[in-house]
Length: 265
Image 1 (tube, rainbow, N blue to C red):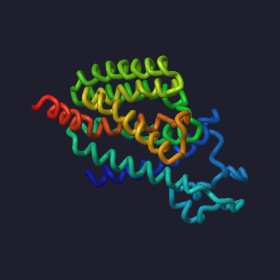
Image 2: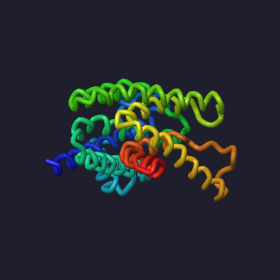
Image 3: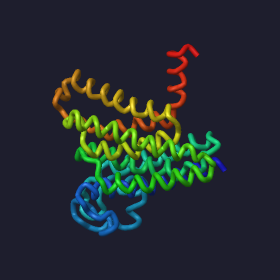
């Protein structure tokens, strides 16, 4: 059963990764992700079904368009492979939890939007409402189903409180220092707060702190290497997502270790 589930996760990750390439390209341009069909950005020729197999088609075509011969960016198979690996790792981690199967849909969904939002934020320094705002409903419903399946109704209440708390915290930061981050970060914080708090108060605190720690270290590194100045803007969305991942996967252990170290317990 675990091997079959990991195989399903791998295939699903490849397929969703292929779709995310479309999302990352079209959503910032306010284009439909459904129509028209995928086409070569150089010659505009529609991509044939046999040329649209994740990773394999890119290799068989030798990274060039069948019609015009223009190079196909390595980013396409890289996104597909990265999504595949993340789906497998997320599934493998959940298999070690008694409530893992109930959490599979929400974790898969978060991985998918996490990949898309990271790439879009890096490309255009924006977290599109078309992805973030519907996620409140989707994540809320999936967490409610997980609570129903596991009987953890207290986790759902905690998720609602975490959503409001982290959103309020980020909103206050934007009001105090508007140049520090965009309002898209505020909107995303509510989704991440909901998920982190479902797993516990420790994951919420650790996940929120880890975002600023990781982002701060990266920004400082850029300044030291003279790749950016003090006024340079660094997308914060990817660090929020990384921090949330740390919080979900290891937040409770980190929080418990911190309490033992500080309280002597």
